[in-house]
Amino acid sequence: MADINVYDRLKELGIELPTAGAPAAAYVMSAQSGNTVYLSGHIAKKDGKVWAGKLGDTLSTEEGKAAARSIAIDLLATLHAHVGDLNKVTRIVKLMSLVNSTLDFTEQHIVTNGASELVADVFGEKGKHARSAFGVAQIPLGACVEIELIAEVA
Image 1: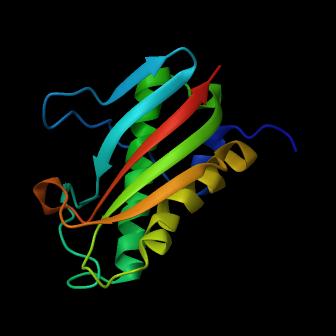
Image 2: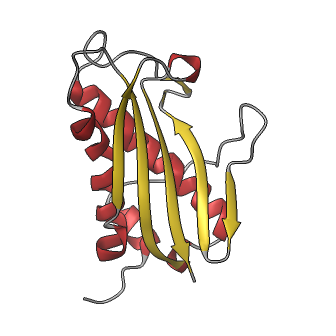
């Protein structure tokens, strides 16, 4: 399979990367060690504001999945800002997802698919990654989902 031009793929998917966000506390949005880039957790946003809510209470699994997809786009914007060219990404190594959910909600993995599927759509084989998805009692600012990403770059 030929290498995918990430920007062509984003265009095909109708995705325009936003401006990378700024940290909300005492941390940086990305850090690199060797060829590994670590992106800080990004929270879900809708219409420029925190996408607040709790899965299993105020939000459905499909809404959570849409929130996770929107986070993946923000993560790609941060990764682009860090490396300058997403085509330098040789592998998306791992996603870790925190889902603000009720005690009886058990579809965190399906919510997280919103991000995983987008990353695989954009990067092809290079986008297939390891992953963890957790249900948590709360996320900063009441956000419904938070996701961090680890990537390898050339």
